[in-house]
Structures are given as C-alpha cells and as structure tokens.
Image (tube, rainbow, N blue to C red; front, side):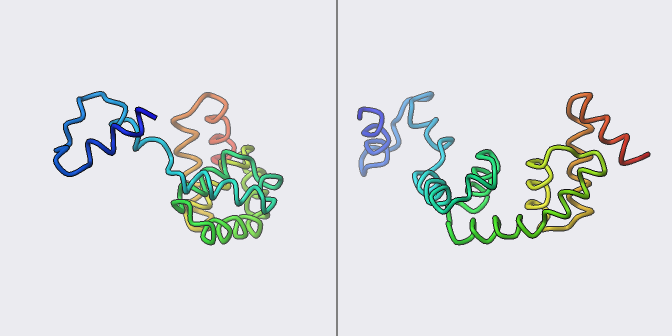
Length: 137
C-alpha cells in the first residue's frame, strides 16, 4: 500500500516529482501494466494457453500492449504459420517458440524471420550456432 501511494504523491500537483532516486516508483514502469495481466488472463480463459506456451503468450500480449482483439488476431495468425514453423524446424531451428516469435516480429515474412533466428543463433550458445551451420549447409 505504501509503494502505491508514493507514485501518486510524486505525480500529484505540488508533488513536483520529488521521489528520491532509486525509489520504488522508478522501478514501476518495468512492471507490465495491469491491462497485460488482464489480457493474459482473458486469453488463457479463451483456451490459448493450451496451444501456446506462456512465454509466447506473454510476448504477444506485450507486443499488442494488452489489446485482446489484436492478441487474438496474432495468435490466430500463428496457427496459420504452423507449416512455416515446421519448415524452420527442418532447417535446424528446433525452438518453435523462437520461430513463432520471429514470424510475429517479421509480420509473417519467412526470410526475415529466418534472418532473425540466424542472428539470434549466431549470438547465442554453441547449440544455436549449430543451427546456423544447418542453414548454411
């Protein structure tokens, strides 16, 4: 309760943003907004948690700033991209969550999604670098 009152006091007229450096209010923007939690709960209630892992679901919610309708559109699009995810797996990208995230970030552009995965694999652990070898080989 005290933490919630501090940001309000700092933002209140006359508060002048006098929150000391390092105060809990400074860390609060990193916490997802309540609408993200509500959207995640709504999507899970719609059954999306069984088809998608929670990390991907959370990423979709964050990308769409908690807008449930946009989240549903992205998740429906992902279902249509199953063959692309399978193609990526045949290329050596065995993490379906990463493949789906790359497709989402590229708007479904397969080549751009693969480029994203290659860049991630090149900067990732040795097992990811092995995937890059499959692409080049």
